[in-house]
Length: 160
Image 1 (spheres, rainbow, N blue to C red):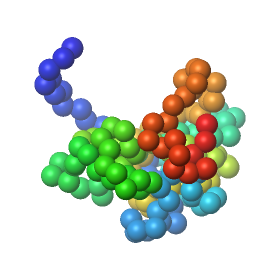
Image 2: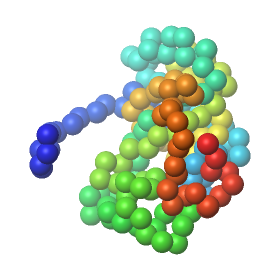
Image 3: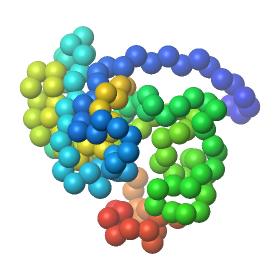
């Protein structure tokens, strides 16, 4: 379907993310740059049953809401990303000021204690609302050769 169809989407956080990053300044821009920063993901008790068997995964995807990203007036459809001085389209970068300020991070799962997940390589602001968790399964990645666009020559830590 094409056009300007805009359904109203409501989401309710399933938990909250805690990290050592209390201010937006100094947060790693990706888990690969988080240098083993540790944090906790607290899943609200009403969703705790959904954590059954998650402890069998070494890594999980956190899907969260950039609650301090600003409003629609702060969205720029082109902007300079952290790893480049040239502007790119917002959908070609991973900046937080987006039409829908949703973030995704793959973190290492260290321990599950009831409704609390201990994680490593966290790159999220303390107090960030958690929208969902998914197990990270490398075999579910896109098959074949992957291109990484303008990031190709930016940093040796951006590898596939």
